[in-house]
Each structure stands twice: as structure tokens, then as C-alpha cells.
Amino acid sequence: MMTVEQVMASHKANVETLFGLTTKAFQGVEKLVELNMTASKAALNEAAAQTSTLLSARDAQELLALQANMFQPLAEKTASYSRHLYDITSSTTAEFSKAAEAQAAEAQKAFMSLVDNAAKNAPAGSETAVAVMKSTVAAANNALESVQKAVKQATDLVESNISAVAAQATEVTKTASKKR
Image 1 (tube, one colour):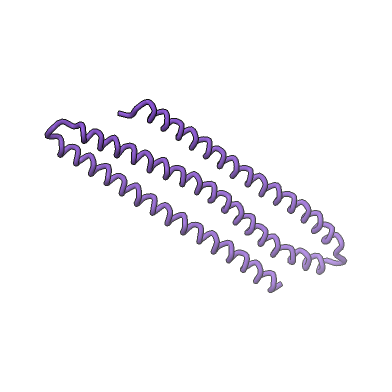
Image 2 (cartoon, helix red, strand yellow):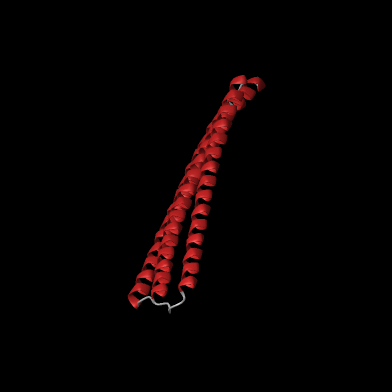
């Protein structure tokens, strides 16, 4: 059995984790708001400058050339915005994952301690049941570790694919702009 001090320490740790995660979530939201405000200001300023430039065109051919030259920077800025958005989201998610893994490890440790304590105080003849219980817990821990590794691999794969797509989109835009 857990003592009152152990229960209180566990609750205190859980509350600290909750506040830490809440702080991380707010930091992520702040970064997203800052990114969107910066992007919105830049888009407004660029729209004003581009409108002024387009209005200064002397003929339709110059107007078309000016419009064509505006596509590459737009695509590059969109790719950059997407990368920043992904970075903010993935770093915030990583913080949550790290905290969840730490909590899971602590819970596993506490549960194993409870199982060991129960095994020490188990009546004679219950060794087989205790062994089965320990084996089940070990199998569950191994399964959890396998799932965590698979999720990490999938996350790494998605991250590399997003980077590759963003780089390819920027390159295609540059190539298309040069052909005009």
C-alpha cells in the first residue's frame, strides 16, 4: 500500500506536469499567433506593393510579366510558412509526448513496485500467479515500447516527407518561373 506521503507526492507531481503541459500549450499557441500575425502583416504589405507595381504597368504584356514574376516568391513564402507551422506543431507535440512517456514510465515503475510488494506479501503457493502477473506486465511494457518506437519512426518519416515535398514545391516553382 502507498503511504499518504507517496499519494501526496504523486498528486503534486501530476499537478506540476499538468501546469507544465499547459504552459507548453500556451507557448505553442503564442508561436502560432505570432507566425500568423507576421505572415498577415507581410501579406498586406506585399499586396499593397504588388498592387502599386501592377497599376504602374504600361501595357498588357508588362502586366502579365509582372504577375508571372509574383508567383515564385508567393510559393516560396507559402512553403516557408508551412515549414514554420510544422516546426511549431511538431515541437509542441514532442513536448507532450515526452511528458506522456515520462508519466508512463513513472506509472510502470509504481505498478511494478506494487506488484513486487504484493509478491513479497503473497501467501505461500501463489508464486505461479505472481510470476504470471509479472510476465504479463513485462509483455505489456514491451508492447508499449514497440508502439512508441513505431510512432517515432512514423513521425520521422512524415517529417522527412514534408521537408521533401516543400523543397520540391519550391524547386518546381523556381523552374516554372524561369521558363516564363
